[in-house]
Image (cartoon, rainbow, N blue to C red; front, side, top):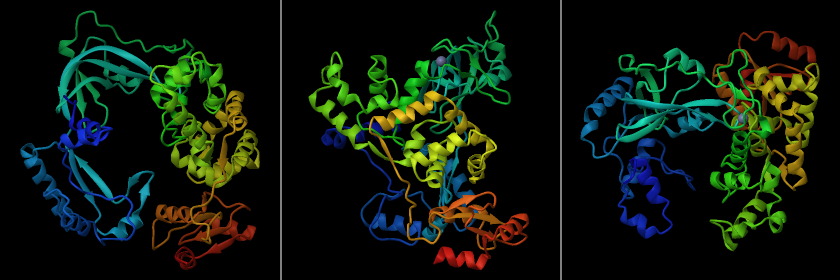
Length: 489
Ligand SMILES: [Zn+2]
């Protein structure tokens, strides 16, 4: 028995023996494509038609809508037919039909701007909350989780639900033993919506949120205007160390095959890996382990050798992945890429972040001037570098033979590659966000204000002080027409 269709699909595809997969009789509707050697359609609808001609099954409920009214009518129609369908769905996805427009709209991180999902209303159920458990995350955040009497919601058995944070528990006055209403929508973790007060057991007490970390006993503090309470244990906190290592080897970071959550936890437990650099000395130190990795549970000669090779393969890594892997608060993939783009090399970035610790320095001004970084994110980055043990982690990786590659702008031949651009005033042909995305796609850095390091200021209508400052500093200004010529060039 599978818990839900998603697990059934994923579990069947993951079979090592493809004959087992074949016996599972999976069916799918083709709805997208990966890489193609040549364009095969000008519009999404044409792509679906071609899929069909090639013999793929395309969802018969798909439709090309000519406007908002048609799109909404389709939603109502699907809601009405939902229960008759021989498979589960959780909503309707709308896509921009023209593929050239899809390209132009682009993506935000990994979410397309040309598609949107309209989800059906969430499904709810009542159950008893047995216990409030506290999980400690990679950044030391204490997160409350509700442990529930298992209950079925929309075809899935749910036994845990999110409680968000300390304030949420207080506001809803959620107590252990309460009967609660939970909600599940799509793939997101189920949430506790409210307490059924009438069914509260006698003697149930208000929940006292812990002031110490349940993992390491360090004080858990909550800073002003923050909703989250965090463990201050840093490196000594097992939850943070293991979580930080997991993040480090995660798919978007170092992505080391064969070194997943389970292996990291086991190696940490046995003292083989304490910090990131230890991963890269595993092969060298393996002879000193008792027992060596190949003799451990779940390992053999071949898998140990494969692991060492997978680790060696990641000794050279893209700078943005390296930065992301460090797990600095608020530095996700997008910000890591921005930093890589702006500083180019690990040593330049590291030196600049150390210098930026002085808030009066030009290094600090440069950091907060990177568009989309700003003072708040800068504070988290600088807090990371203010801790000597964090700098030691970076140095340790270098000593262990890890090299972050110099960041290379995606299109080296572009006239904007490596240039710093500032936008001011409004453009007619595109929004500011679009202009920024185009500039970055062509390898430029987009800054928020004009300085001597600025290469171009793009001056739109109603431009103000930035245009004046550019003239004062002798920075080249471009009108909209010149800007368009430059990016089309
Ligand atoms: Zn802790």
